[in-house]
Amino acid sequence: MAEEKELTGIERELVLQYLRDDNVPVTVSLESKPQQIDSDLVEGKNQGPSSDSRVSYGAIFPVAIKSQQMKVLDQGIILLQSGDRTIDNVVQQFLGKQVKVQFYFNRLGLYFITEMKNYSGGLAIVVPKSIKRIPDVQISHNFDFTAKLSYFNDDSKIDINCSIVPSFPLFIEPKWGHIALENQLEAKNILMDAVNQSKAGIGAPIGNGVHLFPVCNFLTCQNVEENSAVEGRKVPLTVIYIDHSKIVFAAHKNSSDFLMKDSEYDLQLEFTFKENSLLKRKISIKCIVTNEYAKNSKKCYVAEYSTIKTEDERFLYERFEGKVLAS
Image (tube, rainbow, N blue to C red):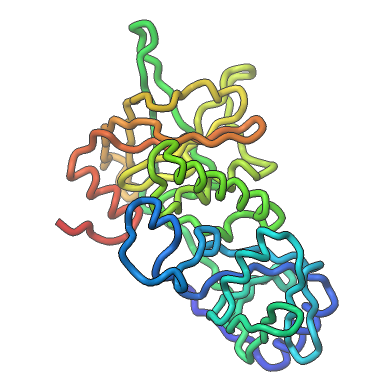
């Protein structure tokens, strides 16, 4: 990871002036993971801290604060003003906690860590002396990856070669910040709908929900690549997330009838190592579509592995987590 370089005193003053004058939106998130969230209780994990130390599921993700909801004082204090009720309820849970505030200055990502404080009119953020640059994350894999989904229709085998697009890089942990700031409020609504479905017992439990970040991103993104070699042919499914236990497919309108919830499919994964293209790793998995999410003309399918060899599970874990799976 690249070094997180701290701004000089002069640079900090320029940034504060920019925040005051240019109506810059920011995102605010908890600096450290909470001990327990409400969704833990939904899945039966009811042991842990008291309700006073719990936060809602929505509070574990960065919250986008529009410029209209902020007033930046000359002293380097950001006053948060009431706006969207849902956002206000989430941000209120940050009171007295260390938060991470992120924003862009001339396309340069910056952040600082501070405590969310109270004042007579609401909540306030004091900008500390230390403001740091968000380091660029270089994504590099020593392999190429392909995926193919198969099923039978009237005794005929149907193969779907899934596409991979650069805007949804695989084998890295998705971040909420990958979603465009202007889409984050809409994405948060989709996320909370998914949480509510899980609470109502619809579909499979969502676990830590990390795989829902690319789902929310895909459903709210206005310009998602579509791959079609032949005009008029159905667009193939796109893989937007994969780990050692599940895979997420995304589809546009003319391919949204490919998969059915609770149906099982054959999944073929192939890794070709760049140092030697003759070195390949092929993995055969059976997967079941457990959850689906749709908006307008787009749909996402979450498929969990129903049958996978132990050595293949280990291989995928090491590709995604970058560490060895314990025996």
